Length: 289
Image 1: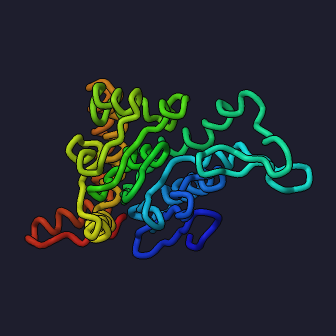
Image 2: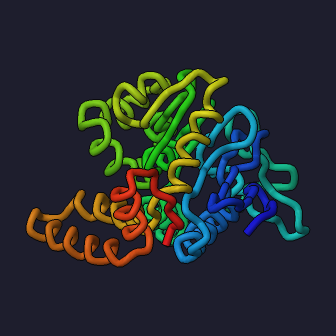
Image 3: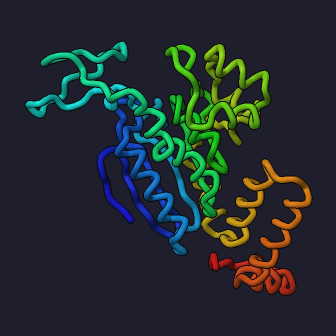
C-alpha cells in the first residue's frame, strides 16, 4: 500500500495511510484516474486492520483546485493525440480539430461511481480521516475538506465553491454538506454568490476544525494523526459511524445504534485495556483491536 500512481502518492507506516494529491502544476486537480484510486485506497483502508488513520494532503502550494474537467472533456483523437488541451483561462484549444466531448448524459452516469462515491466514503469509512489544507481547496477539494473528520488549514488558505461562477450546479454533496456545517445563510453565500472563504474564517465558521499559520500546519496535523493512530480504533470507528447515522436518524433509532455500537466496542481488546489503565491510573496503550 505504497507508491506513486498517476497523480496520487500513497504511503503507509505506523498505522497511518497517507494519500497525497500530486499534480502541483495543476493545483492538484483530481482527474478520473485519481478519483478511482482514492476510492480504491480508502475502501481498502476500511478493511485493513493495520490502518488506524487516513491523511489527505496535497503536494506543493495547494490542497486541491477541484476536478480536472478540462482533461475529462478532452478525448484522444483518431491518431492517438489529445484533441484538446487546457489553456490558461480554462478553455480547451484544439491542435488537430474540435474537442471530442462525452455524449449527453455522461455526468449523471459517471458521478455515482466517482465524486458521489468518494465523498460519502470519506464520511462513512470506519477509519478517521484527517485533511491538511493549504492554498486552494475548491470544488471537490472543498468537499473533501468538509467531509473529512478533522481538517486543519493554514489561515491564508482559500475555500471556494466555484459552481455559480462557472455556470453549473454543485456536486460532491456540497449542497448537503455546507448548510449542515455552516448553516443555510453562509452556504447560500458560498454556493449562490461564489464567496471565497479564508482558512481563518473557515475555522471561525466551523467549516473546518482549526486554522494555523502556514509554518505550523504540518506539526498541527501530525499531532492529531499521532493521537488517532494511538487511539482505540474500534471505538473511534464506531463513533464515526454513530455521528454519520445520527445526522438523519430519529432519536429512538439512534439510541438503538448506540446500544449496538457499545455492544461491539465493549468486546474489543482496547476496551479491556482502557479499563485496566483506569484501574491502574496510567495512560492506556491501545493496540487498535
